[in-house]
Image: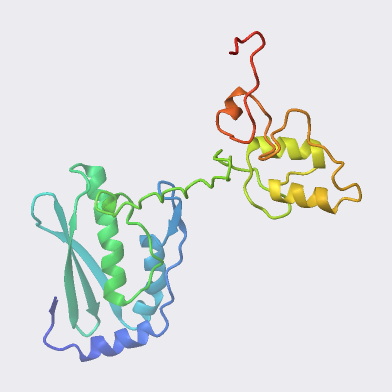
Length: 236
């Protein structure tokens, strides 16, 4: 940071200006990150009138910088001749006019906001910071719940009473037998509480333990439903 020998008048003027400077509005869209942010025009719009009323002005100029970087100097001037300045060294996202312009706009926006005390809404830095911004890691999906019969519970199938996950077979069987999706425990409770307790039957071929449709593939996984004999199979 560099400054004039005296800063008393500049400090007094800046103090009065900051008392009335509002926050910069988020009026620009960033389609890449699906977010809004306060652009350079918004930052200037928030502070220009307050600075002018107190005899303050801002000058921003580029200075020589190391390869792959951009250097911007922001200077706050007062009508008394007092001044205050600082530089911002910004890495270039790519070495072409577009990358230089993106970094320049980003540096001007934050250099101005930092110098006069404007508080812009947070943003992502757009293309100027995208190569350096930390990437948000996608959260791992929660482990799938598994009923006692070992079949994975597909998404969207749950008991209408206790809300526990159920298999597709349990869902289909309970819809046919009870008119609503029920887990085995709630099916058993519904049968026991029925006026005709003990008379309600499961659909033909359903496993009495897990209520899933019986079949060769099911019989290999469920010990409570013995596999059907293949017609004509030889038995000793």
